[in-house]
Length: 119
Figure 1: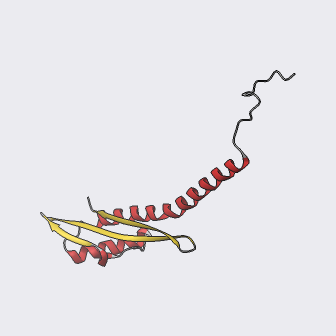
Figure 2 (figure 1 turned 180 degrees about the vertical axis):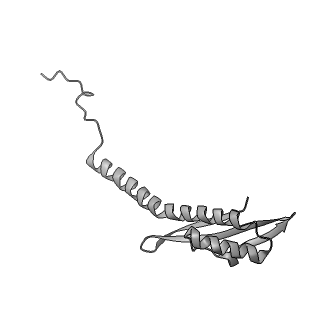
């Protein structure tokens, strides 16, 4: 005489394989995030260097100021010659664009495209 209803005897919860699958997904996201985070920090350093260097009086001076800030900003993705500099109403507008490739596994790569403009 079993007084348990069929619904109460059914087990509930996550299986071992379900937890293993979830751990694998979380691990992959963590690894990709750990590889992408330094490129985001580098992008922020480039934007800061662009905003500092836009005060130059000529195109050559803007490029020179950017290269000086590059040395202190610890980035090497672009240099002063990669900047697009326009003079609009007594001020320089500096823009840039570059790509970063991150190796994931085997032949798989993650391509990040960054672009920005001075304020």
